[in-house]
Length: 146
Image (cartoon, rainbow, N blue to C red):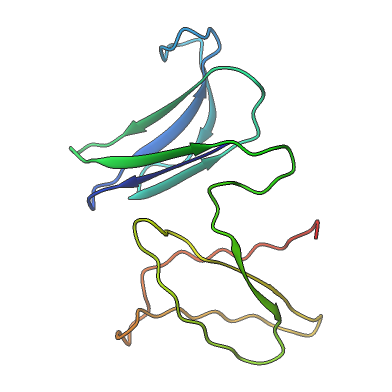
């Protein structure tokens, strides 16, 4: 299961997924935390492998803010349905540059590439038209199953 939420303002929101152990639709002491997406940010994501049952997703903020929430389920072993599809770059054998855009409706870009055993990886991101580095989060993940 994948849950993502985006604040409509610059106010932080927090996302926590609970298992509703007594299936009463009310968050109480008998329920357990499945995934805590963190203490806040304007974009939060919680991914978890869960069994059949009842769950509660709680969004909180210290401020009055609108939000958009998306919940999706994937088959066992399938890709996260809320993840942007990969942009294939192939084997990187020389420097390359790509331009794209992220916004409230397209919050991430994923690039799939391979490196040979003698390569090092340097990634730099800049806002277009701005000489300073952009405000981004970068994750490099090794695909162990293919």
